[in-house]
Length: 275
Image (cartoon, rainbow, N blue to C red):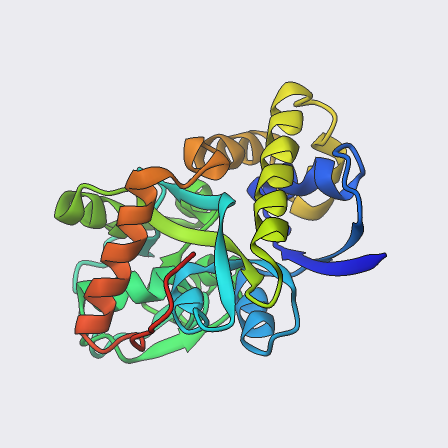
């Protein structure tokens, strides 16, 4: 039996999506899955090294890997009102992305690509795990933080203020949902297998939605100290209709993001389609 490596993050939306699949609540035949949970930037790097057969990935990182991986239509993170935020300490009114230190969750994150599309002058970046950014800004080690995931629900607890919502900026500019991350699979596998994986991921999502209490222990274990209310907000925001299927609007959003980034030289052009 073929064993496929499956990478996803410990964030509640991913553990919610993949719970049923990795706990054999969804029937799979002819292959098995070996899961690996890592933060999104680590997954980006692992995919860049070709170490994962199927993985969650930032759309920024996927732009560099279109020759090696194809995008699956289910399991991703797209939506409205869910984009990355720029935050600073309360009372911090002087914003200079060229000179001030900006904490970012990784160079290959979609958040950083959006920031560079918004202001190409940003250059004094400090890379750190996403969960360390709020503390870094609070303690003054960086002036500005580019935050993702559950940090958008908790930054006020650190005495920080929102100075820019990149998701709102994107939506007002384009009218599209914001494409944050997707599930990709190596192109060397057959189309039939990729279609099968798309369907199994959809089944996994529907199972979790129909048995919402069952995955909670698994989700909470990986969410560590995250409050139950934050976990619920996180899942409600990032698991949506685009998670079941990217759909025409989501597809257009991804293509537009890549087109704009290619024009500005932020990502390489590719002869490969996203699918």
